Length: 594
Image (cartoon, rainbow, N blue to C red; front, side):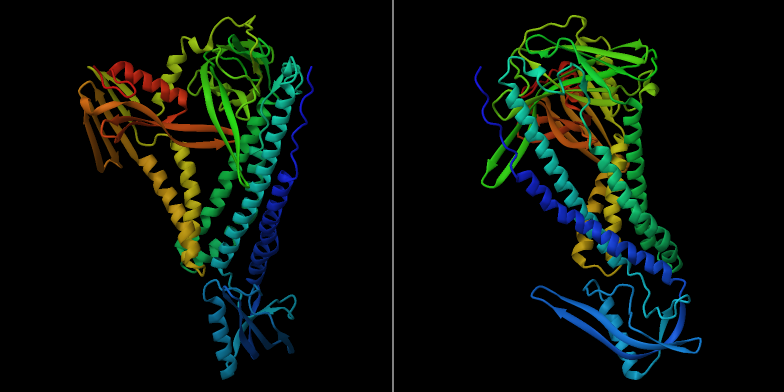
């Protein structure tokens, strides 16, 4: 047997990338621990300090100029008396650094300089437990605090993201090396530890650990800040600022709930193993698999299985490397569910066409086969497996083998159409009318996704509003506020619009209403409709699971398009609706009915 070529080295690239991200992550964490949190602690402590009269010996606004900007700080020396003893203080404000965020430094410096020239006493705040500690201005500067918080989260998040991306690239390269080695062996599926014993583990997820890190860091800053700052902001009569500040802990609590749910899901279902029949999956033959899930059996409990082949490519142009993925083939079906001593046994089988590529086949880098198993919402036993979803990377090769124990094709399950219809009805009502169909997409469809976007947008919008009402530069308030309000408006539009569609052999009529008040109508005669097609709208990814949403549109002979259906989750469900509409109306891709 020929020797395999020398293994591709992962080289220093991934380590360099990880080291590049490390200073960003450290800068974000350092700013949180060394600046944001100490500022909050000092401000909270100083609320109990006592006021005294102080005489300024000196006061000066110091300008530090560079080629790009000028920053300011205030220096002062003052004397004050406590219990008959005289003290000298030099602390001016909570923060001692130099900055140009707003007019705080210049205004404070001008006020103290004027008091020093005129000999006017100023008020100082003294620590009653240690009179040697004093400060002239104990204000929090919420704009500066939010500026630092955003800087820390953006830089820390970017650094963490770069490091995780480097880890992911290294994992991909390691996978490619394993694939390259397996192609030299007669039975490559037996050499990989993840496939060797035909007990295939669910794909490892880093999503919940990332969620926990984000939730703990975010709440570690946002909750103390809200507890200390919001009540006093309300006392000062600034409800808008208080409301903006409250968005941060609310977003933190949402992250915490998300992390807890992800962890409970992982603990409930444990270390699941998929067993294939035949092993490996066979191109030109069968792909069959079974899985034992530790949930009680109930009549009507249903699981949907999706098998797909994805092509992963890596292209290099100069110093830039681009990674991309696309789905070459996909099928889904309903699994057989039967009681097992320690739960339920889920089994399914698909017929595989002969033209598909094998796992790790050389070419455009490599090909990957994946199986996703999820509980079907709305099934009778859904309470036994709420939100269950697991994904497995599986071996599929050209062996021509058939399944021994699994006789029924899951793609031909008699209830699969009912499940597809359930997916459609999650967002629409489909009613058959003479010569065509009427579809109604109600208000509030995909409300969970829209609410998540609303929270995300509200955090950014709140940050922008807070920066606008404080001392931060206009650029930051416009950037964060603009992004936030755009997402908020998009989410509100998603929640607050409905779509009614009438499609038959005479043509197309649609009406979209926003909050029941504004109406937008579109019409096209049958002769103007070239056909119907699917278009990808957007994708979301949670815990390593990617979900793509589609819209169905009519393509007119003029090149324009009219939306016929939107918010369709997954290509299979969208394709099912497209096929159903084509059957009932006579339209096909690119053709009008004859």
